[in-house]
Image 1 (cartoon, rainbow, N blue to C red):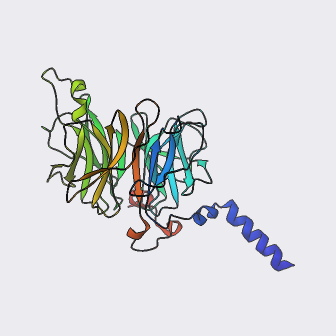
Image 2: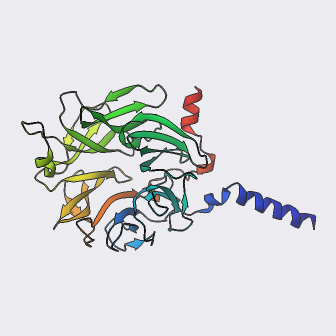
Length: 324
């Protein structure tokens, strides 16, 4: 009788402390999460890396988009307005156990995971914040847009507003020191940065043209995908700039390919490009309402996890750095 009582209490404690989240299962094969308008409103889908077997995960009348895999693949962070305002939500990799990240709803978006899987950075207005999952505190980091957390946990790259244009900037989380990624004479609109799996390169979209009057609106189709080394050297254009515009770059888990979004037949679609051959391949073809077909993919592959990490045992990098 005492044993049964002890077992019951222990089980209750597991539930109350949220350990059940660790029971979520990562996919056992590579999957791409992405946003799609094919069901007349934005939904989060999964598909294979070749574009096959697309499955709707969210199945909700709200606008669900911008999915981002947790580092070990058990969870997906995404943006939804299902409670009346665009905010951050979590779900298990199979679409179950949907829950809001914060109790107090606010306009939040463009999330990125810390490599420890316990923290996230995101955009709220024109401010980037950091928060620990399971807690309700938000810590102001820097003014900017589209944050991406480095694989070693020490830096976040983001788009900063410099005299009305976006410039990629890297901030050291420990010191707060900032540096522009490209030289000061690099022009115009740099956004949507993404770290390579090794953390040595950054992909981003760049509208590298300005009309004589300073405007860029008439040149938007020239926005395309570039890669640069972490120190700002070795700049390469990856996708041809003849248009339509290309953005939202994301690395494959092995670092050999990039996903990106580009218009095809007046619909946004997801492409991937092999970095060795520079050969693009269109992965999605289904159309949606307006011109928003499919967009913003994020790639997870369990084969690239060298060690079966246990997220609940990893250190909290942000807190550790702040104490040092």
